[in-house]
Image (cartoon, rainbow, N blue to C red; front, side, top):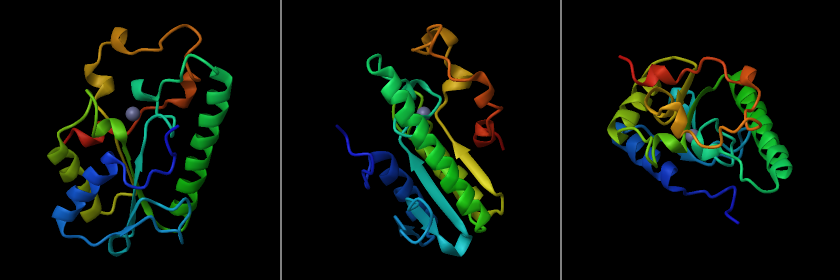
Length: 172
Ligand code: ZN
């Protein structure tokens, strides 16, 4: 089984490389902050979380539950999502700005142009917006029929998927 806390995942390395180009200084895996955020930019009051879609329960094809032991995975990943939400709230409450970059934005067939992702993060860091979410291009491009796991039982509560902020990353 893959380690949940893989510290140097490929998506994370891609983000770090992008940040490096901005010249901003960052700290990695800061244990003094809730949830040990992957990347911390104190000078910008910002943290960047790079989330693996499966382990963090992203609502995308990479986050689809395995067909077996469904209840186990459901509970497990729900727990992970809740922990992520608690950590994000704790960070926000402490005055941090929080960017979440999903793995699918950087790897796989729905990935975005890495330069575009870097630019998006760079703009966010330079600004003062509170939150940023960068995800793969699943929604706008992929026809519904291609999204796997869309069997009748699969749907996580539809109410849990409000309009996402993803579109922000494509505009402007
Ligand atoms: Zn994803």
